[in-house]
Structure formats: structure tokens, C-alpha cells
Length: 334
Image 1 (cartoon, rainbow, N blue to C red):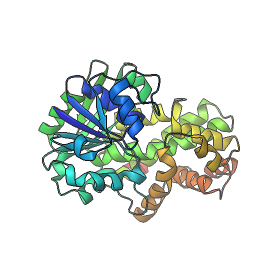
Image 2: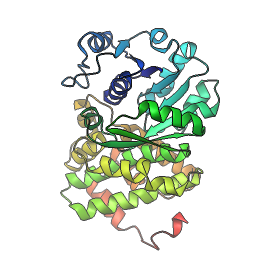
Image 3: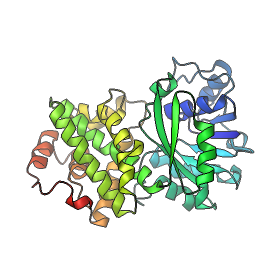
Image 4: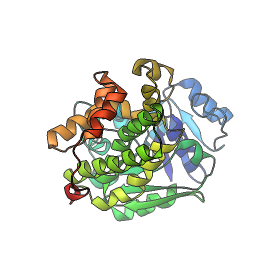
């Protein structure tokens, strides 16, 4: 299959390298030096400098070169820049191509999921749009560590065909028809990971983390159900699986942001030191606004949003959550 991957960050590069074994894959990069290094030296100097990429992988800064004849287009662009890159790709994107979003975020201002952004920009059938989501830390996948993910698509036949293309011996891909649930799980878990990191930074232990993960999963499910998702999706790889990995791993950028906030550092200082995007920072206010619009209670998300704006200290956010009156644990998820 001819594949184009838009976005040369760590995850886009990883997926491009995986699919290049047996497929004609081209990675689109903004930076000409990165594209040259990927093609000639099989390295991504900015995001995976110590990892050797598939020698068959090619990269280009020209969207026409990357997208020409593509049957599968993977979009691995941070959520707040996602629309602009899809618009850039639109004149070159084959009308029959399947488009897979691997971005875990919500667009600020519109509250749109990435599949909705794709549908808004491109004149294609919704059944051509897929979402890949799961507990997929790029370095572990690239190292060949056993990993699993889920590919969500309304078209079962297309999902199965693409699943076989993306699956490797160590990277197992399951299918799901719940595009909404998989996207909400992937987006909101970044917010909860910031909360989990705040707990780490404040010196709290596993009881606190377990509570945040579990109640965070309830918030994810609550919002997803309000948008029409299946509750069962949140027990799977795009829900509980992704949430657990992102809240627990030292590789998690969102957990790192929360931990540093918990230690008393400013958000500007933390972000200024990071090369890669922590999706939860931009997505948190978008999710908080979406939840408010839908009347969905999401107390952890609200507190994280307040910490990110500086209107609430991490310690006061935790104190506020502990004042939240608990009721019957699962009634609001019925």
C-alpha cells in the first residue's frame, strides 16, 4: 500500500517507520533537515535521534510528493495545528484515500474532535475517516516492545484492511466502530495525566494516583456517553489502557507537565524546556468548555484547567477535589 504520514514528531515517525516495512511510505516533515536525515541517514535528529528507522522510509517537505497516489494518509499533527496541515494537504490528497488521525486532542474554539476537523476540511465520506488510539508510547513501540492499539472506523471492511497493514509482530491492532469513544478517550486521558503528575509532584502515592485514574476514567466515560460513545469503549485500549500508561509512565509528556507544576514550577517554564507538545495543555480548556456546554460534570478537568491558567495552586486543586461530595459511584454513568 502507498502510505503518507503527515507529521515527523516521535509518533508520526514511529508509525512511518513501522509501515515502511512492506509498504511505500513517505513521511511529510516541515523541516528540510529532518526530511533529509530521515531519507539519507535513517534518523530523526529532533525526536528519535538514537533510533534507526526503516531504511525503506522516505521523507519530504513537499506535500505533493508525500501524498501523491496515497491510499492511506496518517495525520500525526498536534491538535491545535491539525486543521492547518489538513488544509495544506487538501489539494494533494487523493479523494479515495483513507485518512487516519492519530492525534489525541480537542480543537480550541470549536470543541471539534480531529475526525470532525478532517470531515470539515475534506470533502470525503465519513467512512473513510479512522482513528488510531491506545497506550502507545513511541519509544517503546519503536523498540519492538509488545504493544497494542485500536483502530476505530465506521467501515468494518476498511478497518480490517488497514488493521492488517499497520499490525506487526510486536504492535497488535484491534478494531472498533466507536470513533467518538476512541477519540474522547485519547483526548481526555491527557488531562487526567496532568492531574496524576500533579499528585506525583506534590509527593502523593499510589492511592492518590489510583483514585485519580479511576475517577478520571469516570469523567472520560461521562463525556463520551454524552457525545454518543459506547461505555464499553472506555474499558478498552483507547480508554483504560491509554489512561493507565499516560498517567503512570515517566515518558508521558502530560504527566511530566503535571509533576513539574506540582513541584511549584510555572507552566511557561516547563513548556519552554520541552521539545515535544504536551497535548493536554491545549486540550484541557477545550474539553472543559465542551463539558460545560453539554452540562457534563468533570471536576478533575475543571481543577486542571484552573491550575494551567494559574488561578488555582496545585495543592488547592487537590484540596478542592477532596471537598467534592461523593455520591453513588457509578450512577451517573448509567
